[in-house]
Amino acid sequence: MTKLTKADLVQKALTAARESKHIEFKEEFDPASPGEWCEVIKDIVAISNSGGGIIVFGLDDSGKSAKTSLAGLAAIDPADISNRITKYTGPVDLEFEIHELAKYGQKLEAFVIQPATIPIVFQKPGTYDIGGGKQKTAFGQGTVYFRHGAKSETGTTNDLRISLERQVESIRKSWIKGVRKVVTAPVGAEVVTVHAPHRSAAATTVRAVNDPKATPVRLTRDRSRSVGALIHEEISDGIFDEINNVVEANRVLARGQQHFFLGAPIYYRVYAERHHVYQDDADLVVLFRSAVSEFYAPFIFWALTLPAKSIAETVQEVYLHPRTTPAHCLIRLAVLLGPKLCQWLSGRWHSKWKNHPQPPGFIWTFEKMVTKMATTDARLIAARLSQTAQVQISPESRIAVADLLNDPRRAATLLSETCMKVFRGESELRSIARALDYIAYGSEIRKRGPEITDAVLALLGDSKAGDITGTDEEGEP
Image (cartoon, rainbow, N blue to C red; front, side, top):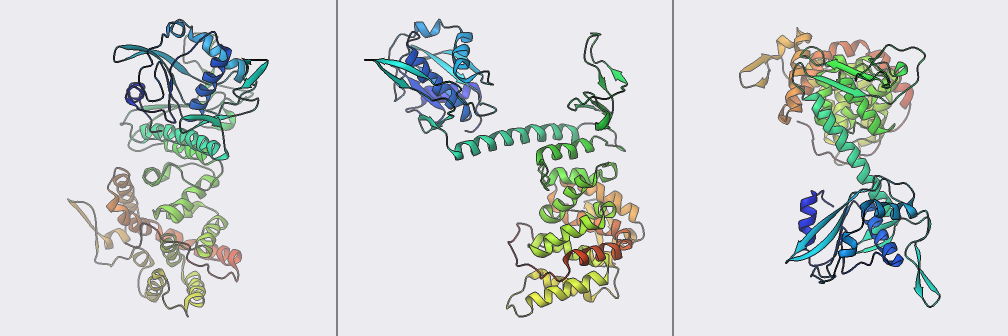
């Protein structure tokens, strides 16, 4: 369900001509009937498990007024309803509100039900007497109910999958909302984040309130020494230490997966402050791998600090499962690392594609780049720029590439500025950001060329190049 405000949901229910997944109509309700309670509790739980919705009492199946008295329902204490629900579900996170509505002058009652964080399971059966010595069961013990169209029915694997995806997306949006507040905070802003509590033998503590009995917290970035750690840092133009919290937020979302879930724009924001990222190799591998395999973004800075084996493993993935975008990252990295890796990679690809009527385009690009290596600066080859070219990141600013080759620090500064512009929406500057990355760090990564090349060859050995597994939205600039 597209997330609606409470007012929108009520309006939609009052104008609907039929029931739906998130809207249930009931002509009448007898608070003295155990059977009617069981049936309405089933609907409340099913709607909550399905993303929330509304039950309107006093309307028939077509949304027309049933002109029945709802005085008994209007007099019920909401706490009594909650107690009746938890009798069958146990303590659960289920929120609802009772509202008095009107349609064409007829008074109605409605339950507005919020989405359940975790699917609610019935712990006791909803069985009631239907007369004649017979009983009916509205729901059984251990069952999970969802809405299928206008019906509340036992859940399926697909229902549980959708529920999980909905919660993951909710968490993701919550994280990204917080991340955006951090990365767009003005100069001088203060950011406070709280870690889960961990016990520690010694602590330097502060209190956020005057109550001497309040739980103490520690000002620290060291998770191993934190007790309800309160991180309180100032953002300035020169230092943006909170960028580490962005990377840590991704770690929580990823749960061990090699993926930067916060997306390419946030990645560029992180890369703009790359010098202030202090993380374990595992987090840097995620940034490196995502830039190469997903975002076609600058990445050389991470490669300068990562173990050669970690770089080789990402090369292995691209080599065995090539796609156009990661392949272009790979050939540029190979050019910067030196002739030995280029000759090996070129030979492998030539063996793979020599008899193919239409080899991938990056094969020809790579061969042209290799032919220039004896006479041209590897940084220019990787950036696909000429010595006389200029870089323009704003209408009033043009910088000669030749000047940047002689001043890598200036290129690194411009790279940060460009990444910030990409983060703010100027996506056309992504190719310039990549070029500046090669110019700024190309000479440094060349120094690690033999080490990384040996790691790649040791890992891949005689492995044959993989087949193209797909194309990418963004190809070669």
